[in-house]
Image (tube, rainbow, N blue to C red; front, top):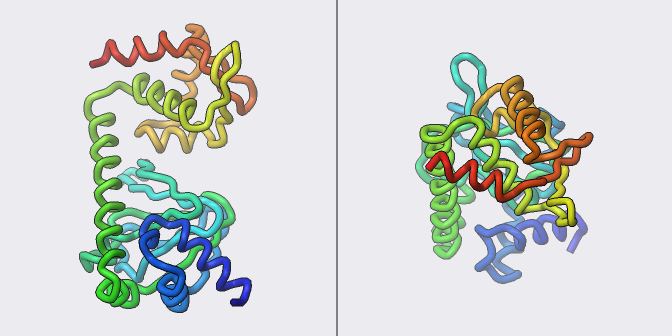
Length: 234
């Protein structure tokens, strides 16, 4: 097996869609894929374009987002290695419902819509995995809608900080520390606001003693206080 194909097979094995396939089945699917490279900020596709096919991230990260008529972005999710992109339009035949752009230098597998649909007919277990992935995405989107509709910006920011701390924080006596590896502009797009309000609310939380920000490090100093603040919104 050539190194390029090894990399493709390793990526497919790590992807939820193909976790039920054996090595020979994954190898067969790998023959239908190609590798595409994207620079930071480069579009994979734009909302409303006809769906050409399915992507799977080999390396880097891809931002999935919607854009309002005024140009404001709402980030729906960010997919890293092993993440799949555009399952829904591959099946329903519609256009891409959102845009996708590389966050970093990224490599992705691409398989055409016709090839992927044909493979699902041959391997129904892949189609069932697609339903699981799309269902999980739907739940996340419902959560985003609930946050945007029923919570304040302050509480959306607190929720995001606590989720990041839980996902990748390091626990010390002083609190839980994690790297803020995105700009305030990108954070604003994730929680449905603008950069100035993110900066203002981060400064307010720091002044109130809930968090500490030093460079790109955020420390959750008073988790109980933040959770109580969130509970007051319910």
